[in-house]
Structures are given as structure tokens and as C-alpha cells.
Image 1 (cartoon, rainbow, N blue to C red):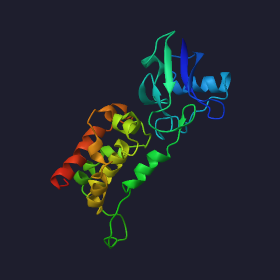
Image 2 (spheres, one colour):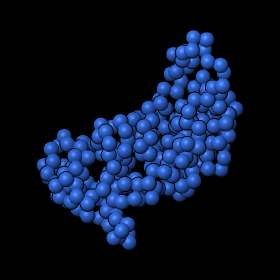
Image 3 (cartoon, one colour):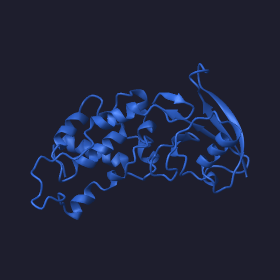
Image 4 (tube, rainbow, N blue to C red):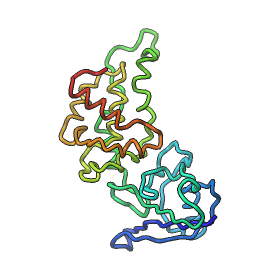
Length: 238
């Protein structure tokens, strides 16, 4: 089948503003959008810049806006979004500075991630056997969903509150905080909740569910944000 890839291009060395370029590409229906982008870069226009790594939905580095929705290019099959002769639009995720073409500067995103203390804090002495700190299966299950985050930024960059104010910590950082706040072994939940109760913290969420729809791992992002809000409102972590 033949499709057209309409790609938003921007080269800061030559362009004053982004523009669209369209490429005719022959693909198999079971090809992924990433395959079509490779066809353009490898056989039609080597100047196209995009970021990818594992290409199997694990690293999250190829998050981009496809037909107006945040997705991983390596997980989207052509046959699920287009028919023969259709045009697929591809552009960088929103809310982060564009470095070139489909590549954005992820540093502001990772700064928010680091701000919520995304690591286990436990100052108790190590277990007598020197091995891991144990917890029950139920305690582990409590935060299982938010362990699935791959930091692709699809959720945060689909959020209108983040578009309006980049200082907002954003859904992905809250998901990371949730993962540790509700971990029975951790001892820094209150510190994270204080961080998230700040002006650019969790209360900027307007519960529009864009983040949940955008997550390529199926994490219930809005639910996790709601649970953090509830912990802040009640002072109870459970």
C-alpha cells in the first residue's frame, strides 16, 4: 500500500519556523510508523532527524505526535491508522523545545522527574541477612501499575496544563512519585507529598484524562494522580 507521510520539519540552522514536508512511501499494512520514517530517512531524505533506540516499545525514545495523538512510532501499525492513499501526520511531542525535526529537548522533562525523588529512601539498618527488604505481595501490588512507566513523556506532553505552564511537574513525574509514595518500604513519602503540594505540583492537574489515553504502557495515570491528591487531602497513605 502507498501512504503519504506529512512530517513537521525544523532545522534551527536554516529555518526560522517549522514547516511541513510530505513524502510518498510504500509500506506493508503491518509495518509500523517507525518503519515508514526509516524509509524516508534511509532512502529519500537523510536529513530527517528522529530519535529511536530499542524500536520495540521498551525504551520510549520514539514518542511523537501521530495524527494528532501522542504515540510510540515503534508500536503503531500503519493498518490501524491509515488506508491505502491516506496521509499520516507526524510531528514532535508538544510542550518541549524542538532540537531538530522530531527530536525534542527532554531535559525539562527529566528535571521534573528528578525533583520528585524517584528512588527508594530507607534509613533503617540493612536486614540481618544482608539481602533485600521484603514486603508482602499485597504491598507490592499496591504500586505495580506505576512501575510500568518508561519515561517516554507521552503523558506529560499530552497534558494541557503542561502546555500552558512548563513548570508544572506533569503526569510522568507524579507517576514516578506515586511508585515510591505507596511503596511500604519507603520512608520519604511525606517529602514527596510536600513537593507535589507546591504551586506547580499535583493540583495543576485538571483531570482531562489525556495522560491516561496517551500512555503506551496502559498505566492508569489519572487514577494514580488522583490517589496522590487523596493522600495530600486526607494525610493518609494507603
